[in-house]
Image (cartoon, rainbow, N blue to C red; front, top):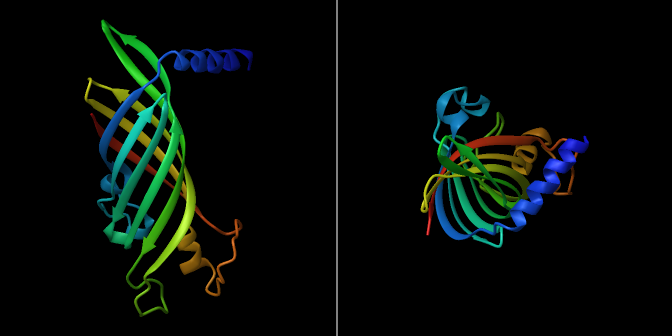
Length: 190
């Protein structure tokens, strides 16, 4: 435990001396849904993509994003705030910069179309939620980076549509499913 705390402490001190400053545009795909699908789309492949614009200054990142997953009639708008913990490693003669980025993400979930067994009318709806992210970003060059992004989001829309048919809008933690997503992201830094 002492070694872990020492490692985290030295990483934080190291990060303080290596402030990051840049603006980026990125595109990402949900790897699992693209390769093997998921239960809502009957384990068939489906394209779920995410676009983001972000600004990094003094290791603080602020971003806005849009995700679209047509197969389940789902989209979301996000704003995120995270902090960068840069770590430098050497592989051979090449220095690889890796950044660990935990963040929080307020989200507006939009749903449309018909869903459920007894529902036959259009169900357009919007729901507010707050999710969390953990990212590993690797800087390949001055302008390019790749990232693995893990997102976990309380899916209020699922709870409202499927789990409680008489949902009256009261805030509730019990019964609200947490859905995780795994994205592979390509960033272009300005």
